[in-house]
Image (cartoon, rainbow, N blue to C red; front, side, top):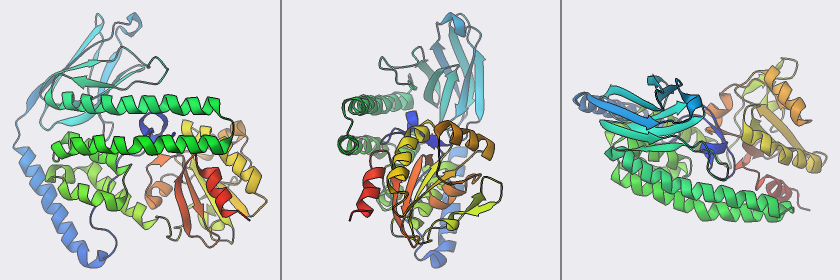
Length: 403
């Protein structure tokens, strides 16, 4: 699953994202000498964790909820794992209610959904209650409902409500700025100030929960969230505290790999090449543009990504202002075929060059797990900036082209 980035850290609502993102204390330096030690250590952790959790007894869980909308009668309610989207259980709405019963050995995070109603829960022993009656907040923001009724779900619900409160408020303020200001520089300044104010609070909330859940599913969730906010170096101490169960999870290992790639392609590093196709289906590489003597802005996007479409006017403005001043602007279409991309190019009036059909290569090489993603490269191919967004793309380009 891919996520689309909207403004600031609102990945859940406005982004397309790949599962997993993490950091680890062992990075590229000393890689050769550390490789066998690390492999042995990780293998030992995985084996130990699996043996430990294999001893747990199988327990019964019950998920109950009300969906009183008559149009939902007979609708399927589905529970799917959060990490790999595998469906684990389902039932039908009957008389405005639903009840799902199953067995669980190790608690895990899951999504629950029915038509346009969505929730998130930890599948664990006991009776789990979830209310998915509302689809949106009063201001029109989609709601992902937390569950309650069991120990981990109660704690998770408290965390999610605190995060949601911050995020909902941020979205409303963000949109208010969009309405009130027309000057792009003033708008960007205010939006960046808003991001800077809220981000530390989000990080603090996740860190507090992690300190109480260093070796269970809730701790795993907070690590995933923190890995999208902290740098690889900052995450080192987080992983040093994580227990063997968390470190053994496939999602954790994916996060580790992603953050290693992120560090290898951070600001100041040379670009890494990948290949896609041109509009005629012929091979086309990133190196056909990057490192050729011009500053190059790369916009990773897809037609299905709402955040990408919202960002397109900014890219168009940058291209209009600086395309004839020595800036190369290139779009890189990910996770979709050229037919879909060409439709979007026509719909959005995109006029700058594109690399088609790159698949997952950019994610794997550059260590990001959401789109849109914007990177800026120097004339000789050095990464000058990454994770640029609607609020700072234009100002960053203006900075390098100042007289």
